[in-house]
Length: 313
Image 1 (tube, rainbow, N blue to C red):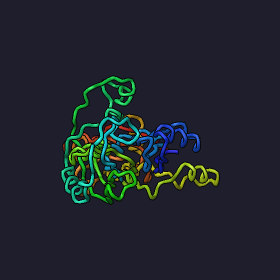
Image 2 (cartoon, rainbow, N blue to C red):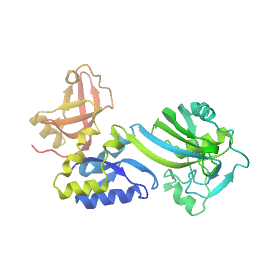
Image 3 (cartoon, one colour):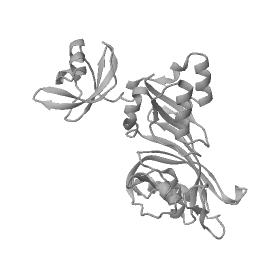
Image 4 (cartoon, rainbow, N blue to C red):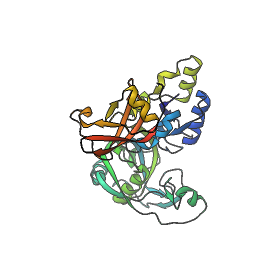
């Protein structure tokens, strides 16, 4: 059972527990995920199965999309509503309008510097920051560059229309790896001069995986009982769809599996240019069995093994 599942994660579960649940449902020992999602968040969680666990790094290169809600008026140590309050705006929040939120959001588009929350999964000397934070250990978190490709205001609720008197905004954003929505919420609140926390989060897309096409744990379990769980498993080459692909002959496939040098002509890739260090998906009879890196030698390309998934010859 090799490939990936577009799991629609539920609120209240850690990514680890979701993967463990998939492992139990499918009976697949080798499982992992392509990117952590906060316990209180929901949406797309890519789960890797079998040989797919070797491809988790490729998910990190993909764009991710989120829909997040911001509650203005106070700040917490975790930058979300589940943390401890550390600041609160005193006075009326009627000055926070839809137009002001839209204007402030425009400064978050493109490449920006972002300081992640101390309760993030980023590691400091090999230890996740959230573990240090829970122990009360303070450490400096450096700003880092991230890319927000698109960010927009989906809806806005003014203070006067809110039951608790706190204005709220729902934003949609597509971003690079390492971007924290909670940090955007915190920084937007600071930009508006009123503080802000993330109060809800959905990962709506991860690469070409969308939340609307995802499968819940309950639906996956039902599919297993009906004997058709395969319909939810994406093949290995799904994550390699943008890689140049090369179909090898039986002879070259055997040579490759034996660790012998296998070369390819540059012409094999048509108009697509393959450069030194590029990754190439190798296929036999139309099925991906390995990823190789290109080592250019005159007019030929040496296929150096990077990942091997296995092949039946």
